Image: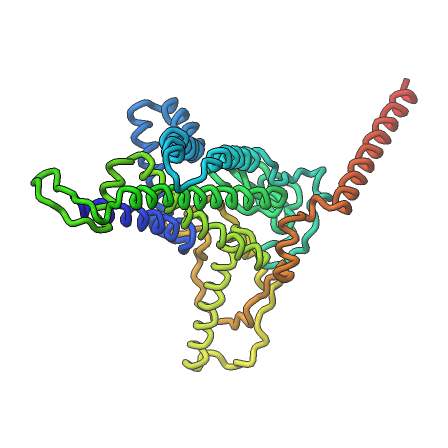
Length: 426
């Protein structure tokens, strides 16, 4: 029993890291992410439909839409309840931790709740037919984005934008939909989302080190490495070591130790996720574009290999091809335009990633050099665009105001024209 608790904790941490890798950092074809986003919900709704009918499915969908929000509140508020109840009592008795940490704990808690609320209610930048001038700040790259109308909304689809089926609105510089805050992340609230992550990382790291020092002080005060322990089942004396002491602390402070383990694991998980977003931001990419570029890279490598094989086999007479330009691949972005959530793109229901080309082409064509990301302006400019979105600039606001004024003038002119026609007819 004494050697069982630490492997259990390590297994828990490993499980958290595995979930992070499989659902966030791994390929969009992750078996786990496809199971979580597609297969399991279909099975669940099928069972509910048989038991409770369509009304049951409707209620279940409303609950599942808020599922991650519920989990977040249960975990975060539950952990803070344990800290306020058991942790603060421990701090009051421990000479190793300053009592002022109680006050700072309240500040961290308020920051945590504020950042969650702010990220969940801030607008990502919704595009309408009227607000297009405000968000029309990027050129078309004719690879991921082409100049055409949105098939759902009807108006022109701006570069880097995407229709979000979770909110049924068009989002500027769409990143992903985050179920933990129940909000879409886009051009105008991406910086707030990063702040939300940073606050929670700070909270977890702070809590981990604080509880660690509480437990460390407990070990020192009780001189546990020189204490005598007994096996509860056999009554045999057990030599004190790290495993035994960890088990003792776990059993004596079960609730606080569980929160300590959770905070330690989430510090790593959230840290990796935050670094992933910083990497994408520094490269001038959104999460949506990151997965698109992965597929472009996969396609380019496949076409290169196919072309080289054809040259070796003598099936290509002229190998001095100039290669294709980005404009030759216009429309690929439409093929890659899929829903992106917290764990990447979802599949198309046929066991195949929707980012995966579905058509087989036996012809060999030199794809040319790998296309460049025209939205990558350098680390400084890329991060600057995150902190100061183009749509919130003075120029963008002026264009938007001018377009509204012009639209109002044209509407007023048309109304006056109608009035004049009616007056003449009478």
